[in-house]
Image (cartoon, rainbow, N blue to C red; front, side):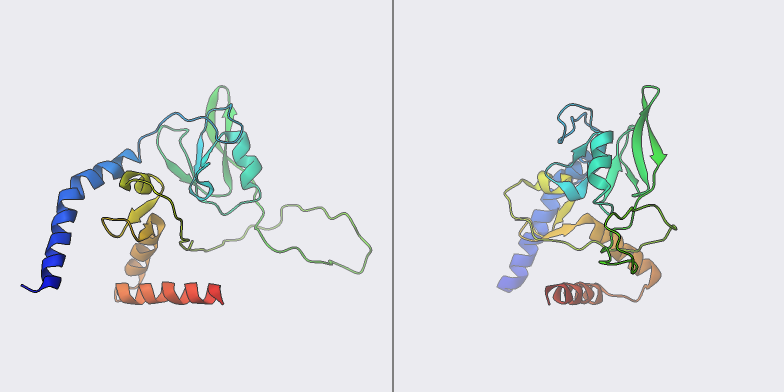
Length: 204
């Protein structure tokens, strides 16, 4: 047996031994825990935003204050006793002593024109226009810190190695699954090459 084959066998054995703990860590992330808003430090947190870590917990009011500007953040609510992803057009509000999900208008984050017309207008009012559909796929960014395996999973990442030297954002798996459903012939190598190409285009 070659040294490479031996190393691969040892890696597989490590993954097999760690599988029960990894599954437990994944299930723990779905537990609903009572948290206080990380921003006002007063109200009960009912929104969790994966983009705002490490201050990911929001009360209903702070969620609206922060995410009016950060419209495309990935948010979940816990108001019904379980994690539920909500779109930017929904928020949580307190009604009759109970938290409910309500519709709200959101503005698409776009660059603002320096001039709209030939008039000398200094005050510009921004209002809701027509509804549109926006398709996005969030890219990964490098984050350096020293957490445990369970901390990575709780934060929405999945380690590619036992030492967690490489992390995948869990949304990446959903994107790959959706692409495989739409285009079954797409390989992992083609998907990875597409991500490499997108990363290179952003760095240019």
